[in-house]
Length: 423
Image (cartoon, rainbow, N blue to C red; front, top):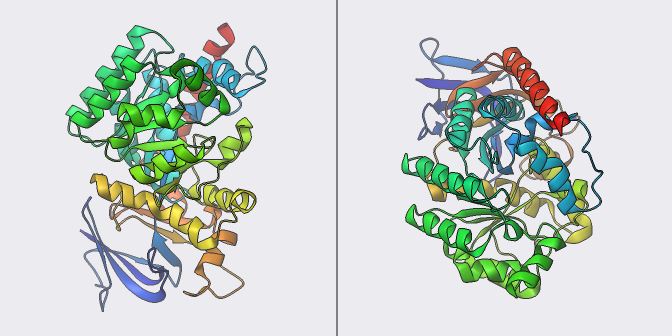
């Protein structure tokens, strides 16, 4: 079935050409977009855009959907004073208490939040050390119910002992062996020993995929690596073969020296920046110049709004690297290059956003980036198309019952918070 968009103001995501046109959107993971001379009067679905702005939908390069139920959570038993304590007293306490119902509720609620903000594809990094088996398939199923394409992984580490490490390896292999596209996840150098690192790299190479790992998010990661292994984090990962794996994602990459930057640049690995999370955790801001062309953006679980992330990249980037509009937009759209290279279904050109963007100034091909940086935001999203199917119509999610999804999320959050109060 073909979905027609009548009288759209189409912004080409690659060329930034703006034109008034009719559009035909084919359904399915491989569906395309064409520009017919006429729109049929009956049979297929027709949406009259009445000149509304239409462009390609968005994708998130690094998320933690398991944090969805954390909003307003009880205060930790100890107030953290540094990044490692933030992990110990907040996030590691939370992920240990997740169960299958909470994971599914988190994924469904996050997916609803994403599609309402024009995000139709998510690269997620999951952790639930005492509810590992089946967790990735649970997230995938929840995303697909709403209309979100995905590349998932489980965050392997040694921090909870041998049992969860083995279960994480088994879950990762079972997921990739099922034929789904994904990554082999690792938490970070300071929570992964050499044996687990070697097994993760071997698993990634077996399934011709990459490692997805946090890199030098805080200086503590580098301090631990030098003290324990006699080398810096990227050098350790390079020696272990992480940078040789296809489609590896290195999240954050804030505290890198010149040699590490060279290794990343020459490897072609993907680097994902998350400045709002970095500011929240007081770990510093990265300078992503000279790290190569494969820089993309994520949210790191802070929220599910990629337009907001793009504005944060631009504004913080003024102080760190004098980033331009053009480079900001290039990084914003780079994730599509990765998903295409991996053959990940669900991030094709038939993912579109229709905006109610009543701008007080003209939007043209010459000034589209100015509108992208300073004008467009999630409040302007009217409707969203995922893989050629309407998933948000006039601000309402149509694939699932949003009220039921959020009511269940609140119920699961209450269960999670009770577990947090127990210790």
